[in-house]
Length: 212
Image (cartoon, rainbow, N blue to C red; front, top):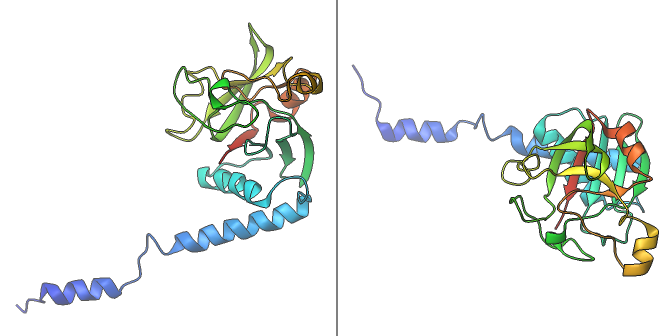
């Protein structure tokens, strides 16, 4: 029996294409191109930075979920900006743009830090699946949020991070304080906007929280 030298075997293996790593750059490129095309089709220029939309779109693709309605909270903007965008990916429309608060543990005017830790009162980045409408004893009608990114927002349920309405999310509060009020980590919206959030996002919508 003729034995093939191990050095020759290793040399031949190195020449073979990698089945596990080769498709990744192509897939990433396709996702980036699709995001860019969708950004233009929806007409988001002048409303939202393309890089922010691309990251939200890439996160949805990474998790392999089918998002019909995607909310993106761009926490790189100050809380005085209408930094929450609701996008209908099927109809390719920007449905709504409004205010959203960040957590007390994340900063004042700017959301400058993030945490997944219990008791941090901070905002957590990443992708969330929006669950059922619930009634919060403190906030009234609200939406469950299920964090999908391990180590980033996976403690959302145990921290009781939900989307809810709040009096401190309003033009009047901004006029008085120079910023929105802050939550304990929840992406709080105005009480006026909350019914529409429920109608658009409950049981099947997705929320992507972007931050630097």
